[in-house]
Image 1 (cartoon, rainbow, N blue to C red):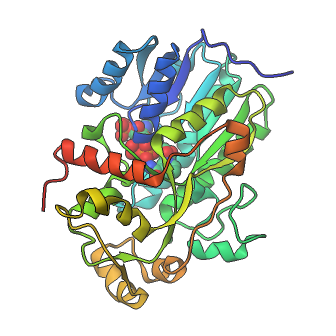
Image 2 (cartoon, rainbow, N blue to C red):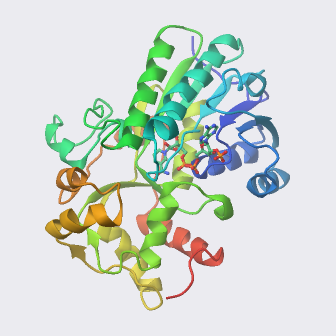
Length: 356
Ligand code: NAP
């Protein structure tokens, strides 16, 4: 039977305060839906202010529920009456002391917690999981192992671990856990979104925790003024990603994984999009650094830039096949320069980036 989601029923979003979820919540509210926002701290006025403002301007309604990925049963109230659940919550940071506790547990046990709640909640028909391209590949060099020199939904990350690429590992084990739980029941289907690196403005620039913001901030704060590594990236705009999530929720035929990535690009090309408007006033990187220099210096600058990371990523492109997201979810991808410039300008306007 063809799946239909009743838009008069509430829709649940985990991690509604997050960067990626923000635009999805806005889209749901603008479409007139009632959003059950599962958040860690419903009393955090600063984080919720922007969501409340979006709700006030929309046809929809937002209700908050206190939930934590690591507290069993804490999504029960938020899920009541929902046919559709978007599970976006998961920590996205590389700055961790204990990767098991700070990344793997919330990602994997959190996914189990949310999906097992769906098993207990009769109304649930579909779960849209925000996984990542990090569950598709571990290092750029993995491209060499692919069937046709391009990452597709058939690929799984086999190279990350607790010790190497812990964030990517967390996303891989969480998505595998989701498919395993999905397989053991038949009431709800699972649609997975696998975004590449997300860029573009946040609905709330004042409370961002996403690593995406650190990356763009570094283009303007001088951290990269000497140059950037030669390294390929897949990039997707946060607003296009919201459309992908929304359509994954409401397109009856949607199924499986979806590489949601607008462009295959290089680190330096991201910087180049900022040069025309901001080059005169900000130390936008202008060149690529030699690999040996990053190999030598990287680990001293940032503990995430290990020698293994450098040898397996620098100098290699990132190429992903986004055709399924276009054909099945109807996503259209805006140019990278728009994502980068809108985001950079937002950091300036929010006072997060001063002038050089
Ligand atoms: P973010 O802004 O840091 O959002 C993370 C969200 O997860 C926040 O809402 C956070 O809630 C919530 N969260 C973290 N730990 C939690 C816990 N223990 N219990 C409940 N909620 C918890 O990062 P983001 O970039 O939007 O990431 C959102 C999703 O997109 C993640 O699944 C991430 O892996 C995925 N993704 C992101 C990118 C990217 O480039 N940004 C790319 C691919 C996939 P609080 O507000 O309470 O901290």
